[in-house]
Picture 1: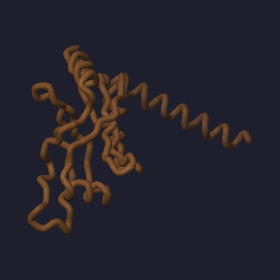
Picture 2 (picture 1 turned 90 degrees about the vertical axis):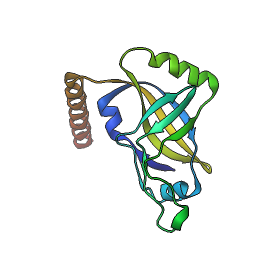
Picture 3 (picture 1 turned 45 degrees about the vertical axis):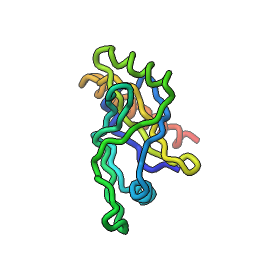
Picture 4 (picture 1 turned 90 degrees about the horizontal axis):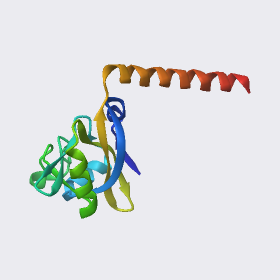
Length: 147
């Protein structure tokens, strides 16, 4: 079940590769996620030592959690296999690459994050993406009328 999709990420970055990662959460965060009270817009991944963390992901406090609530904008550890972490860390050494979260979702009872290794798009690339999107929409409209 999908919780939230970071639509802005695919527009601002050219996603070269994506990975499915687990995320370390506390109970009140999971309950807030079930209510879809999360914002991934400005989130990004960063390495601290050999561990990967998700920064700037805002999960709003759970309304019924009293004083056991969580801090909304804390950094959260992402869980990947060691070889995936090493591969990501090696690719980040390349200039201009960044880790962005693309989607947050439930898989069985676990919360997963789809993270992408992205390269920032230039303005003309963004315009080309919009142009392609408009052309595709127009073709779909014409095909609908054709039938």
